[in-house]
Each structure stands twice: as structure tokens, then as C-alpha cells.
Length: 115
Image 1 (cartoon, rainbow, N blue to C red):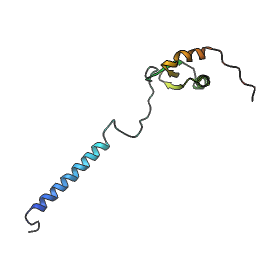
Image 2 (cartoon, rainbow, N blue to C red; image 1 turned 90 degrees about the vertical axis):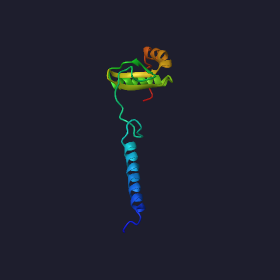
Image 3 (cartoon, helix red, strand yellow; image 1 turned 180 degrees about the vertical axis):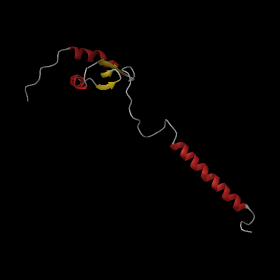
Image 4 (cartoon, one colour; image 1 turned 60 degrees about the horizontal axis):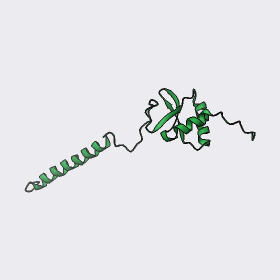
């Protein structure tokens, strides 16, 4: 008899099933959704889909938006220029929105002569 009393045959079947079980768990973890460590591609949203950020300006171009963002940055107001589905928007936290609108409503400072 090749396998003796049959326990080694049973043991090989159990080891084989255990190996398939481990592979099944590994593949299930690999292809599951929602728990990936790889960052997803950012998607554009509407101006109201940015969480704690609220829009304070709607510049016609990204370049003008960056100029407005730099004005806010000079006033120590954190701002982010985002491309929404509605066009470029300058976003700030809700607590800073009133101050940001005040800074943006004021005329821009004259260009410096240090060129």
C-alpha cells in the first residue's frame, strides 16, 4: 500500500484545502473595494461638494484665481483654488469666508517697484 493507513491521504487533502482557503482570503482582500492603500484619482465636483470649504470668488480663469489666492495668502488666510464642474472657484474655510470676502473686495495693492 502506497499511503499506509489513509491518514496521509487525508492530511494531503486537508493541506490542499487549507492552501486554497488562504489563497481565497488573499484574493478576496486584494480585490475588495473601499480599503485600498492606493489613492484614488480626484474627481471634480460642484462648488458645494468640498466639505468644510466654501466658495468666496469665481474667477474667470485659473490665472486670475491664483492671483486672488496669493492676495489671501498675503493676508494669512488659507485658500485653495479648485477646478469645479461650475468653473474655477477660490475656496476658504467657513470661519475665514467673511474676512476673505473683505480682503477680495478691497482694491489690490499697487505693484512693487522692486523689479
